[in-house]
Image (cartoon, rainbow, N blue to C red):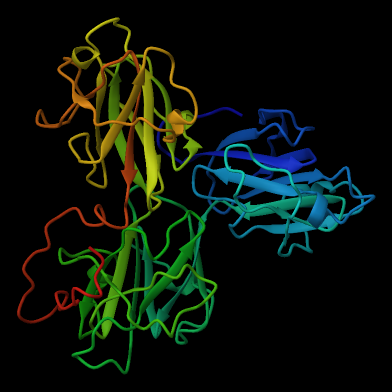
Length: 455
């Protein structure tokens, strides 16, 4: 499949396997089976496919189980996947099954009969993520489909007033009862770089002096949840258009809701709130990082996914800016691996400089490094292993376009290296700007008690 350059759409990479045989892979009704890397007939071998996101398009992967004559495929077959945009086996997949090979209509993701897959208890596994969710069908032949748009399932205690994405009102596209807190709501949208998702609601019976009851509970197909880097506005009157769409300067960290009895058990349990009758929650669904290494970039991993294929820029030239975009996940590692072409004094001749749209730079705390005289192996390239240490400050003369001269360049003592940063996005990088002083009238965003606020 031809990979276009530029940033006109998101490049997605998926790593997957099927127990036992992959029969076809379609995206946007285009047959990509020939573009899949890896042995399609051996579940032990991981397969990967890279494609550019298309609004509303289905990713469809079909295969069959060789052991079905003796066992139900829910116990002897199945499908396991991990994608760079957060899609996994735990996402909102649909499936069809048959006793004969999947026909072209369903292989493209069309037709009727799609429903929820079963959980697979087969012993097969995806080597890079063996414990992730495995799904299957009872039949010998099966196909699984999912839209690569972001889909969020959420609720607000009590009523949803509006949902905006990228400044556009998408409230009318929300499925589910918006006036009942115990009814799931669902909305889908195509990811846009730097765009805010903003969800506003209110609690009709809340008194002015309430603590952090009520709130938002959410799970999204790209990994966003209540524990991600949300910001909140609170008010005793309804919000205007600018605030509902994610504007204004008065956003701050939300409280953790104290109304634990009103939680939807099947959603991720973190429930966030503000001590006001009306509240709006916003988050950027994507982080974009600009960086370069001295001298050669060999790989970039995020949250255990190899996302090197979606890096733009010349990986071999230290003078060229590289960029990479990813969806933030709480506690995930961002890892860059590379090497120096010089043979000595590497703290003076190699390193990393980076700045990201969520405020992370190479001057941020919590960077660690691993270096060696030999090439960096797994699990270090994805952020695992022991022996990570604080990096030195590089005195090499390389630089990053548009980066301040005050941004630190990270270095290491050996020729081959990996730098990692644990993006605890839910805690330290949720809000970039200082919270302005709140006016005496209007917004009330400063009354979250410290016992209910995550620091």
